Figure 1 (cartoon, helix red, strand yellow):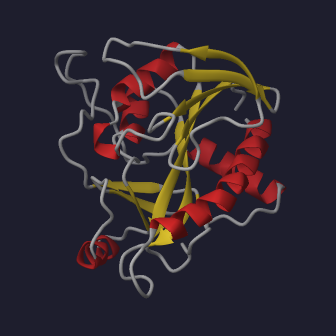
Figure 2: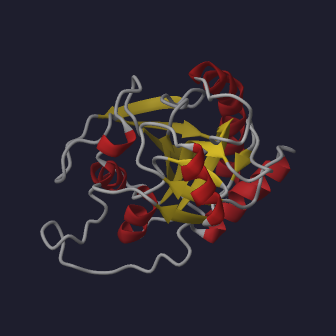
Length: 248
């Protein structure tokens, strides 16, 4: 891999690209509408980096109302050669405790009603993609190797359950997801991964576990607990991104 321009999609807790030198901000309007916000461009680890806050900045757009298609088109139009998505998730698997970082390898889509394809017969003619492996394996391995470079423990696996949101799940729903083989639960992993595949852009995800999923700990999940994990965990994610850029 030798990408010159890499896109990072920031999720909850990562709404600004801090650290790199920002050289431009692109306020865009695609053929499918406006993305969640301006696409920032900068230099980081000797790479040109594009950054887009998935929920906007400030954090305002709920998961089911994100214009995923416009977001991906905007990044493609700015020349993104690969995409690393950052997601805040709940942990289902025992290894996915609060503060853990996972590089998922599979996804199960439980969302509904979202504009989930470019091949809708209107914007583009009907077509089909293979999504057997929803994340680019070379990009995944670069993230995993970069974590080893900086001695950052990460889970090198994870089946991501994409739920509708913005509410968190019930215990019964998490039990169902666990029986389905899911390790993580989030609200934005799809259709993002599929849309990147439709555009032919390598895509991988870094998931920060910000809370145990419903029923995986005593008591209810509080936003204060989630914010506390986000505060420290996202700095580790930034360190991982910086190390990964040196490898790709």
